[in-house]
Length: 123
Image (cartoon, rainbow, N blue to C red; front, side, top):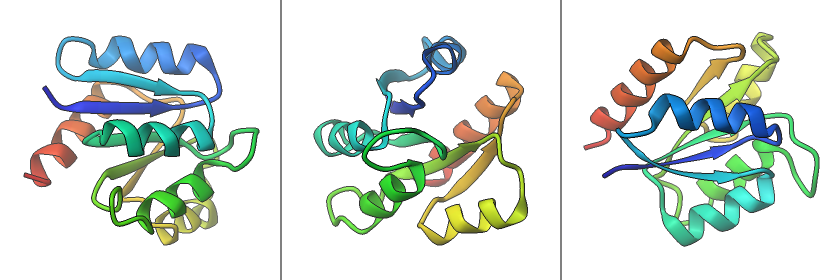
């Protein structure tokens, strides 16, 4: 079974995403950028859903940059989840190495379609 790492500082968002994908993917969770980096290195998920704005040592953009510059994790698909839909924020995320982005609030069905598509394309 493919694995998704959900990274968001809000527990309710992590739970919503987990319920959305339960049964089709193995789900692991992180509540900060630094935890996401540690979990990604340990578990090597197929895809990471990464919130951009998180408190702590570093945000989702910095976590994405770290993961994409590490030879062990650079091939993991990273989709940024952002409440900030401004083009400059999206470009910043893609420049950090993110593979795609998804705006919050999101439709669970649309998120499933995007994740399934990205994972299928990576085979």
